[in-house]
Amino acid sequence: MKDLYIYYQVREEQVQALEARVRAMQHKLAQDSGVAPQLKRRPETKDGLQTWMEIYPVVGDSFGALLESAVQQAELLSLTAGARHMETFMDLPPCA
Image (cartoon, rainbow, N blue to C red; front, top):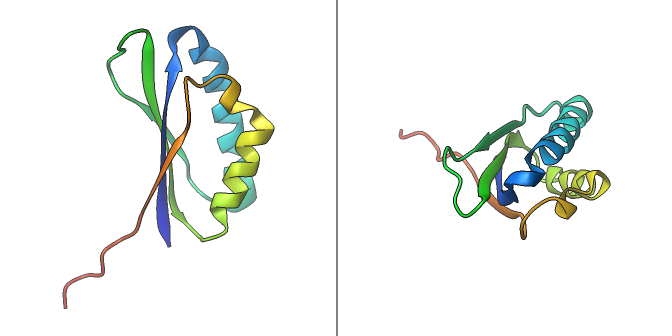
């Protein structure tokens, strides 16, 4: 299992519209897959832009395709300032 971290920027004037879409998308993903998504943002705004992060902990290999489809259906890219960047992390095995 792995965790997905997706970060991107949003213009201040798009914040409310984007938040509504992301939360609706995450709610549906949670219902469909059982994942427990999170939505975060950096505390500061710079040059009229906020940096947001979506976190999807403990997902399987097929979740990335499900997420990409949900992003397209929600038309998130029309409200972001640039691309969405995805990072994947996995747990380190415990020391013996």
